Length: 262
Image (cartoon, rainbow, N blue to C red; front, side, top):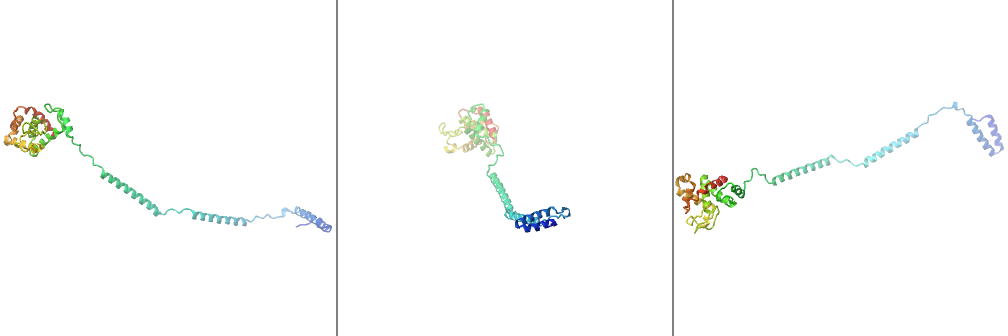
């Protein structure tokens, strides 16, 4: 503290005047001392930031600690093994789906590689438009079935279409291709064969009746003579009907039916 001579004298006088006055005088002297301080002679001092550095260091340590706590609290990443398990499950599901598709393919019905054969009813409808005599417009699925039995019997015996045509012609005249269980006297079946041919049960069996007809035809026309004789004549010679002229009129329609079924 810098105190002038006059100030010191004043302070000394005041001390003698009493404590209160002395205190006031001391305050005045101190004020004057600060006013008289030469600022030009002062040295500027740069503030030291030790306190700030300590505070920043503490703050950094706290931040680092907070980051460590956040890292500890953060959820751990799933290990690669679990991802592999999920991938394996997806692959297994894909394989199971592929297997199910394969099973479904095995269970699925096979597609038709060829067109389905027409039914006897469809064949009858088609033939009704082509026939011209007794059976025109009257052919049924049963009639087609009976005519097919004659075609198959001819094939089994290595006979040609002409043999089948003779059989169909004869049946059209005798029963219009119906397998009747009645007839003139003891006659039954497709050809109205009499009981000397066989039992009634045998004669009502289309396959048996056709074979019996061919056997009789070959007996009457041996050595293939039936191949050259007119169809109506062969039918009449085999059946020995009271109306020999009826057969030839049906031969053309019989040929159309056989051609369709052969």
